[in-house]
Image (cartoon, rainbow, N blue to C red; front, side, top):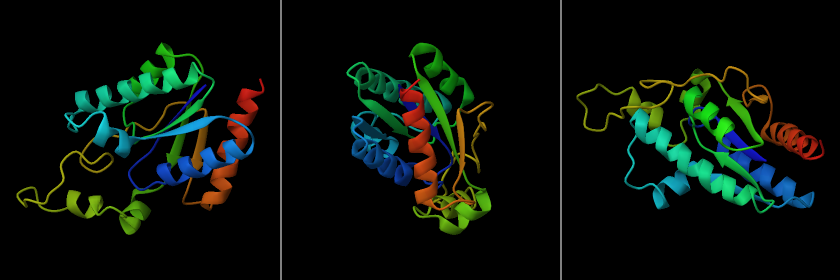
Length: 175
């Protein structure tokens, strides 16, 4: 099984990924978090944020996840993963891929703005600090057509969200 999160920056993907992996380990499930930011900094440094580079990044994360899954480790890919096309590609390429949409309204994400990305994306284009290609603001984010699980971090606290995800994964593993 491979878990692929998708959601806008600041929605809680990494926080949930860490907590879900801890809960899975506590339940005796071997798991590993594949954090999009961490892997991009180490595995995909040469990639930018164009659509083709983002897709290639997800392909690489999917490949790493598949290698882990082949050894009975449940990988949790925590990345923005903005394009339905590449999420579907992973699902068709590897067995047992489950898509979990980590949802949160943009208005709340702009308030949180933990990395300052929304502020930078909203700067005038000529400003040297302007951030191009922020998913959901000045770049595409395809809302998943049919996710296996939809989690809204604006409506539920992180612990509740993590419990729902963990329960989902454990139920899927026991099918």
